[in-house]
Figure 1 (spheres, rainbow, N blue to C red):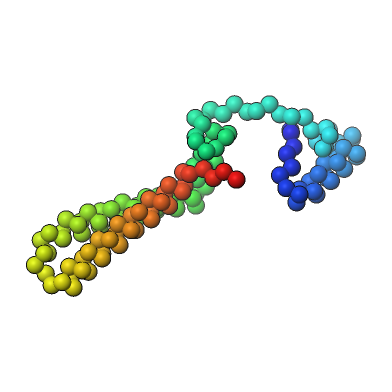
Figure 2 (cartoon, rainbow, N blue to C red):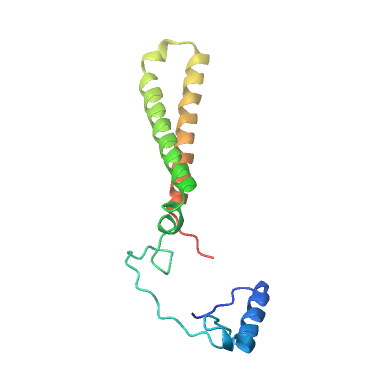
Length: 135
């Protein structure tokens, strides 16, 4: 297993691995700092996605495996669909109500814009579940 030190906070890991090099002769399972051998890269069966080098999307790495994240994604999709339906319904209902008082027409316009905003926000949240983040 090839070891990669990501941060200086991994000093304990380095010290532990070096200790395993020194005293791990009697422990066949011990892999120390100098005795670690580089591993061949694993074959990835997934199609490479833009923005992530190993070929796994954020959805494949976490969302599909985590029940909590999957439920949150499903709720974001439901909210987006409901908000789009409300937007279309309010926009379609705006024409017959042209004879209503100005305050009610303004309220209808604000409600239509709010539904559009909620749908856009839910679409952004849904996209974040699939988007890869590069550090």
